[in-house]
Amino acid sequence: MEKITELNHLEVISFTNVDKEDYEGTYGGNPTQIKTGETKQFPRFLAQHFTKQLINKILLRDTQNHGDGLARKKLEDQILGELGVLTSDLPPQAVPVEPPKEAFEGKPVESSGESVLINELKCEDCGQEFRAKIGLISHRRKHIV
Image (tube, rainbow, N blue to C red; front, side, top):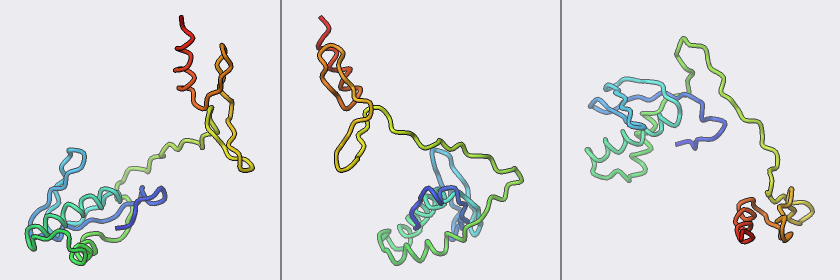
């Protein structure tokens, strides 16, 4: 199966139940019923999840060997179809995307081969420097009398 990446995680792919029995796939505790021969569209991650479950069910029942790579690939090719688009009449919704995070406090960055701290963290009492805020917070406890 194709690896799920940032570029393809929103793609929809068709899933066909090639088994001789109805298939009930489960994801996150939610069952999805797919009748024999029926094809439905799912997000890539869900189609791949259901494909693994269905292949295991078929191979364990028919051959008692669900680790047979050749048989798994053959079934996968039958189950997973082409990439598709959502068939819903609803307009697509915007997915919020966070802007890239700027360098944050205490994160080492590389410049000319040296590790340099952004906004060095120093103890106000003794001047000791820290790479992470949690280290400074832990250190300050030593100064409490």
